[in-house]
Image (cartoon, rainbow, N blue to C red; front, side):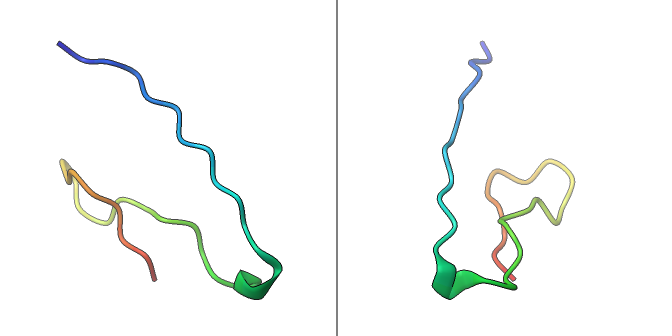
Length: 34
């Protein structure tokens, strides 16, 4: 069973220039911060 999940992200001004979390590996269960 698959359930859709909505995640709200708030980007703070101190994080300006940083990328959003992203899947770096196909089939990954978590996202990477870089």
